[in-house]
Length: 632
Ligand code: GLC
Image (tube, rainbow, N blue to C red; front, side, top):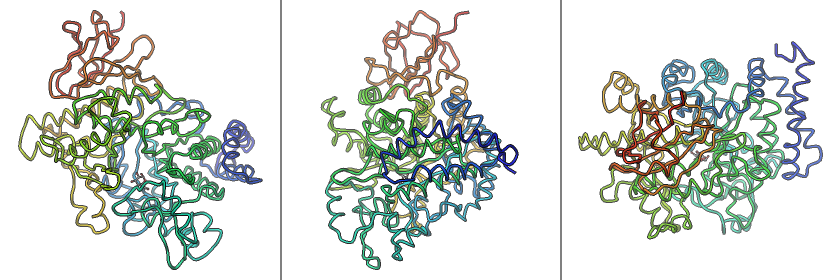
């Protein structure tokens, strides 16, 4: 029995009130995207149907979150991101790992793609052939629902990937399209000749220039060119067709009713295409995101969305809402610029570019939205640093600095501590991206190889520096599985023909539970890492000034080895300082807005902070969160 059976009048009323609340945003966005008579009525019917089917426990969560719509902005939020099979085996085994997740303070679990992928190479699960089935190697949809319920009971929201830009070519829609069905062909972007594809190619970039050059694929049996931005087997959906919107919305609402609380909307930047552009970040993308967000706020308001748009600084902000989309699009978006700038400063020991980019392009806070902050994830690092920004710091240039970073992290730059790999080198553009695990890129692999205790401890400090940054920057820190125990690059993927061409698998190692046991038994350096990350998250969770709704002010200060920011909550801001070099570094407390004559605590070390000669002094790779001691 659902709540609508128990109290149909209340159920109707809730739906109607939410429809009235959401309709303006919905019709506004749909009106700009489509000119299809009756579309809003069809969306209304779809929302109503899924609302009627929504289980009681989720309706209860809807109410809780309607009353507390900023629930995901709190300082208690900590995310953990993992491949289910590599973390625990099957889906049904996940609850056995709840105690471990609790030990890290986790409140949000991103189960990497777990919908049924195409067989063989599936781009790590991002080529989905059935959105309503779980990958059989992980379990069943019924088990998934049960896992969502159990995780929710344990205080964790389940985040699921939903690929919006494309389906696998084995998806039923694509199969029907390939068989010649016109209605299904209209769901994709297909062309009889190469004339239009060639015109688009003039301005398109290539995502996988090595393994999948070009953006279109010709199928002889079909006699058509198909738009395939990513791999040949990933067919781009045609979002100009409102039927695509309706079908994907239906899928989202159905999955929401299974217990998904956060949708990671994959590759959203690419959803809309316009001739003569790079077909990325077009305004219509934000209208689609607004229409999706408005819809779920009506039929399943417990749900939020995270946009995956790995784009340059200027293009990133609209994913969290700007202009007419303010407060109306995704609730979370990856802060890939923070991630890139962390690695840039770590390599150069110079934070000026980081301070400029992070202080210049981004608002200090968003409406009903915040960042997902991270240092590593399952993807490569794209060096999103513009010419314009680099050239502010001569002799730095865009290509020069990007090339330096690629060489630093692939381990060829003289004296580098990093051990990583190039990814998708593009000789035409000179673009090179980088793969490697947090620990290997931060120097742990080389340090262990050389059996060099000082280098090991420096690498641990660099890893904790990154975790301290994402825990305090503002946003939900997303811990990537295994970084908390320093997992190194794993080259076993080279033995699997379906994976060998994709170096991203180097930083997707299986969880090492033996190492967790060693860490918990106090064995260094693993214990330093695990206890260090646990401690940082615990301090974050007891520091309300670090909540995501508190603005983040990036501070200008004279020492280019240090990065500093302030979270100006009420009368007692928290000032966070990070040292990106291996030397002691200082900066005047006053330029950070700190009165050195007032007593301050350093929250991470839980100790009073001294300001010798009025300076904030930071040890090598040091991180400090400073707060004035409250007046008694
Ligand atoms: C996202 C995923 C990435 C995948 C791509 C295509 O960027 O994070 O792993 O290759 O989408 O689906």
